Length: 92
Image (cartoon, rainbow, N blue to C red; front, side, top):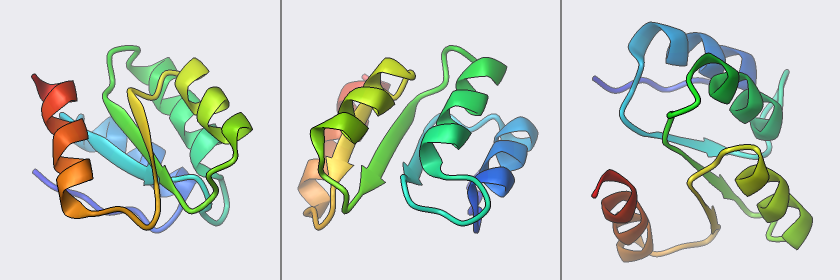
């Protein structure tokens, strides 16, 4: 099952409903940013597989995302093969 959320609040609610195998989520979103949504998702399910995606490549965002439970972080723009490699390593 696949879902798409327009903002961080919707992403958390959709996670509750769908319990997806993998979440890809941007850092920059309206209403609730991706880092706040990541923290809520991890509170719901500590084993959630979340990959953060953002054009904001600053190290502090990467560090905060990983410390908050993200399995990986990819910076835009990225090529499809990079994302596939990350997904395969997570889903192993």
